[in-house]
Structures are given as structure tokens and as C-alpha cells.
Length: 141
Image: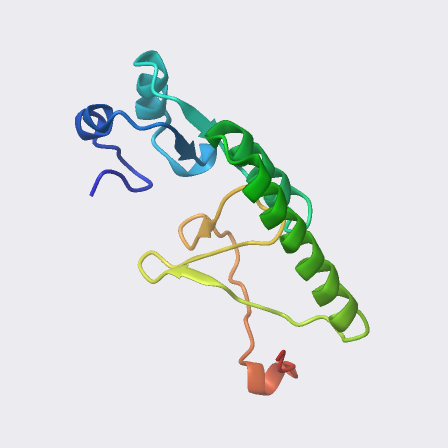
């Protein structure tokens, strides 16, 4: 493995001479990412937070960086179209509560409107999550 969210194999990464590395600022060992910058490895920092805005913009930016703007623009336009269709399709339905578990140990979930995930070690008070059958969850097809 070349990397995970805690460490990067700098020697192997540099030896591969990548055209571009996509980096999530809050998900990587920043000291090692800084070292990649010092070694002139091309990096693109991506941190999409909003589905309908940030993801298609990121696709377009990657298209420019990789010389594939035409394909990227088609993909981002299709993404925007699909998201708009989903918003229209489900706009009259009540919101659905979701618990998205990222890790078992330590328990970690993806929190809405957070720049990163939270873990059970950092939670000050217990969070209550209801089972779908008792919380009135809706099936989305």
C-alpha cells in the first residue's frame, strides 16, 4: 500500500513519478504531504463538502489539470443533471435520519456539516441513533 489516512510511503510515491496526487487536507499526514510539496510532486487538494456544488467543480478542475476538460465537463454536467433529478424526485418526501458508520474501532461516523469525521473518543455525550424500523425510516428506490 502506498498510503492511508495516517501515513504515506514517500519513497515509493516519489519513485512512481505521479502526474498528480489528489489529497484530502483533513485526511492525511500533513507533514508528509508538505514533504511531497518540497519534492515538487504535483498535488491537488480536494475537500468537497457539498454534493451539488463542490463535486462537479472538483471534476472540472481535475479535467483541466489532467488535460481531459471535455470528458470532465460532460461528467460534471451529467452529475449536476442527476443530482437535480434526485432533488426533484425526492423534494416532497420527509427527511430521513441516517447514521453512516465509517469504522468499528474506534466507533467513527460521518457527521453532517463537519469537515472531518468524529470518533467516539471525542464525543462528550452519547448520541442516540434509532433503528430504521423504529424511527419511521423511508425506503428510497
